[in-house]
Length: 180
Image (cartoon, rainbow, N blue to C red; front, side):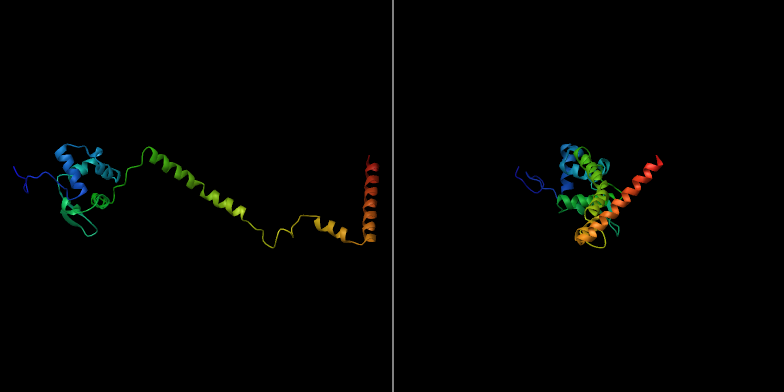
């Protein structure tokens, strides 16, 4: 027979979800093996909900609740928009499934890296610390200025300072001898 409106050789679905339901209903495909079915499952929509929706029920959704046929609601949408609408219709209480395999490992590693953010900030603070009150050349340590003063002092004063040190040493030596 010749193709007509009812009997034709090509069929185009009105939405990704309607295509999924046709593959499930007509071909007996499993939802968890269908490409768009996997998207919906990852979005947190259960297999039983998807199976119920394949019968084109009336659904109520939105911030101002409205009731409409599911297929009509999802008509003329691409896969991303359709999945987002399905997630909204299923309810805000649905949470996406926890990642598995490599995705779970990646999430775990990201959480571990995040734990070290405070340590990283502390290390940066220490590395960039500048003491208050001036530059490093002023704070050379104890005794440095005394040595400079002796170098700059006139020759006579330097000798006097040396004699004083010798006297102090001699008196310490005598005190130690008397104690022993």
